[in-house]
Every structure is written in structure tokens, then in C-alpha cells.
Image 1 (cartoon, rainbow, N blue to C red):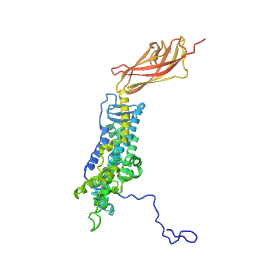
Image 2: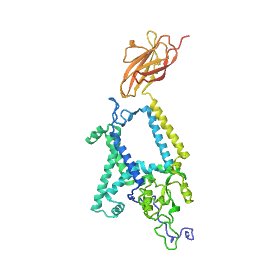
Image 3: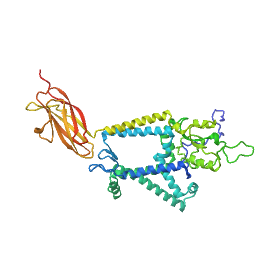
Image 4: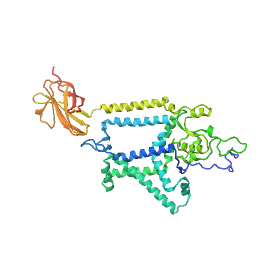
Length: 491
């Protein structure tokens, strides 16, 4: 209660509250090394993700003599995206959009089925943070040694270890940025040019930015990115409910905590209050305080707690993957729901159905797409020309596209104007006929100016169709609708 003076102002003798800061200062987290099935799963996923990221640009994939042989390549110079046998052109960006939508829905699906498993195992921030934490243990020592080193003054030992550790940090960060640019050009060539000083300036600036961000976010900020910067935990929190599978501390079984009950006191729960679950947490939270934003569901606390339960002769599962509904059932002495049943609840099935439908749709479009295309643009000024013999001529800009890694022989034909003939700009008018045949270079667009000549009796506006056919074993044809203009009929 605040004491007021006669004027209604706070009493000068009233103690003032301590000023509150805008945020809490970061408390360093030094996770303890633990072994168990979830730790081994994290090892496997981390190794797989890092291997995919660093090795993929070096994989080769033969596409013939006219296309690059890098398995995965984002060729910005030629506006192509290659992934093994798949080649995506700019007008086919809907494939990329579809994959991004699938990735988003896939996150919803994973969250609905197994909680924040993405955050705990496969998120890039988690993978690189885990890698940097292993570097800490390799150079600084175990958790206790890291605490001692952090508190001791700057002496020769501390300076040596800090410089060694930061050097390894920098090498990892540099290799991360360096691997990224290899996805955008031929990896062996760019790798040699980069260290020879011959690469483009954008390559050096990209590596510099990615090196700095990886070093800052993964090596120093670490769990703060997950707790404060990343928006996904907030979205996931809104998606979780009592039926969601999460890492749960069964307080009804573990409380009250303690190693040994005092004489005459109530019996203690299974939690011996060893603090190991908090010591192994990469974000430094105490799972016993209940579900919280800092929990990335890596399940290392489960490994730690199970080890303690085995040593003390208690049943495992004091901290376990469970739902809040299951925890209430176990508390009431009822059997828990099988995890397999939890995964297939209606919301998960809806996400799986939408995700599968988009994936099947993309596969269908990928399998049925034509590897040729044509685009036609008619000259508008003048709309037509009358030649000396009375024929009517229209001009068109036609773009033939060959989306194969080899040259292809193609035929362009016209329907809609009886008796019409056409020829290309690089052909003599005398060779005009009902079709044009050209060889279109591999993996390229061939712009051609085409003239269409109609008999003198042609009048008014006509709808015409240009049809492009591939004259090889693979075949295929595409059409494009356009307009042919002629003088109006005289009354």
C-alpha cells in the first residue's frame, strides 16, 4: 500500500521500486552432453542435413552436351532451375510456388502430428547451433568447464581457447556461405575462380553476408533466435491443443520433488530434483515448469530423465512425448492413447490430404507438360498491308521455345485463313507456304518474325491459330490463338 502525504502525493519516505529494463539480459546456456535415442536421432538428422547442404552442389547429372551437368543448379544468368532430370523455366514458376506451399503445409502437418519436431531436429538454426555447441565441448570442455572458463579472467588459457573456438566458428560460417553460392554456378569452376580472385563481386559479397549472419545467429545468439526472433514458435503455439503430442513433464507423478523425504513428511514424487533435464536443454528452459515458448521439442530432457529413472529404480517416462489429455488419463489411472492413433486425428488427415493433393497435382503437371512452347504477338501498326497484287499481309513476332537439352526440328503451321501462306523474315517471300520448318537450338528461345499472306479475296477480321509441332520421336504440339486483319468487304 502506498502512503500519501496531505497533498495526495506519494510519501517521500516510501521506498521506490527498482527500475525495470526493457528486456532481460541473456543468460549463457551451456548444455550438458547426453546420450540416448533422441540424442542419436539428432546426430543422424544433423549429419544428414549438413551433408545434403555441403555435398549437393558437387553432384553431377548428365543432361547431354547442351545443358549443364550440375545436379542442382539455380542458373540465374539463363533463368533456369535444374534439379536432376527436372528443368524449370521462368514461365513454370508455379512449380516453385507449389513446392513452397507444400513446405508450409508440411510444417503444419509435422506440428499437428508430432509437435515442434521441425524446430527440435531439422530447422537450420537448430542444426547449426547444435554444431557450434559441439565445437564448444570440443575446445572448452564439458558443461562445468565451460562455466569455469566463462567466469575466469582473461588469461592465456581463456584467450587461447576463445581464439581457437572463434576461428572454428569462422571456418564453419565461411564454409556455409561458400557452399550457398555454389548452387548458382558450376561448383568446381566457381570454387576455383573464388580463391583465384576471379569470381564476380556478388559472389564475394554473398559469402561475406552469409558468413556474418551464420556466425552471429548460430555461434552467439543461438537460443535467442528461437525464443525472440523466429515467428514460427508463435504460430505453432496457436496450433497446439490438448491432443497435440509434445514433450511433457508429468507433474502428478514427479511432485513433490526431492531426493529424500524428511521424517514424518509426505512421500516424495519420482523427480529427484537433479536438474539434469534443464542442464541438457539447448535453450536452457526447465520443462518441469510446463509447456513454454522456449521448448523446441528436441526431447533431450527425455533422454536425461530416463537415465536418472533407470539409476534410481523408477519407471521411465516422467518426462515423455505425450498429450495433455494423456497426462490427465494417466493421472486418473487410465491407459494412455497410442501415439499412432494421435498422429491420425482429423486435423492431421486434412493437412496430409491437402499436402498430398498439391504434390500429386505438381507431379501430374510435370509429367504431362510440353517441352515446347510458342508465343505470338501481332503487329498493331499497321494492322495489315495491301500488296500490289491485292494480297493482304500481316506481320507477327513468334517466339519458338525448345525446352529440351538438344536441338529440335519444329514446324509452325497456320489455320483460320483459307489459302494463307507464311514465311519467316530470313526466308525469301517466294518460299512462302502453309508452314515453316526450323531447327531450334537446345534449351533456348528462338524469336522469329513471320509474315502471313492471304489471297486478295480475304476481308474482315479472322481468328487464326498458330500450331507448333516437334518433328522428332518425342513429338508434342502446342497452339496459340491470334488475329488476322484484312480490309472490310465493300458493299
